[in-house]
Length: 110
Image 1 (cartoon, rainbow, N blue to C red):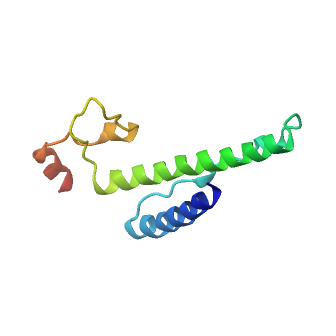
Image 2 (image 1 turned 90 degrees about the vertical axis):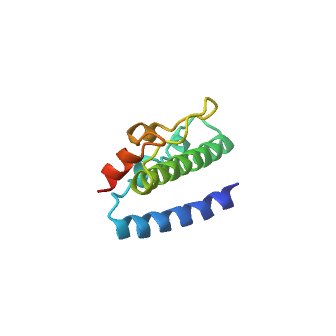
Image 3 (image 1 turned 30 degrees about the vertical axis):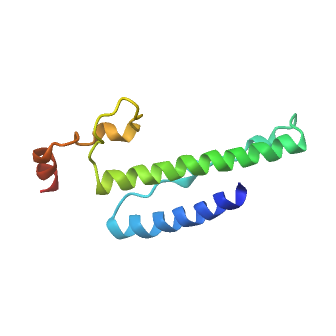
C-alpha cells in the first residue's frame, strides 16, 4: 500500500502546486496534515514504530488530499448535491449553494 500512497502523494502535490498557483487558490499547509512522531516513543517495539510511521503518513496524506479536493470543489463547483439520506455530506459543503437553486448560482457567478 505504500507505493500507491507515494504515487498519490506525488500527483496530488503536483496538482496542488500547479493548479492552486494558476488559479490563485490559497495553498494548504502539508505539515498541518501529515505528522510522523510516534516512532519516537521509547516503549514501542521496532515494528510498532514502523507501523506508527506508516499510519501517520498514510492517514495524514489522505486527510491532506481530501483538504485539497475540498478546496478544489469550493473553487470550481460550490453547489451541494441533491439530497439523499444515504449520502454523508462533507463539512465543506455547508457553505455551498443548495442544489437546484439557479438564481443563487447566477448571483454568485456575477
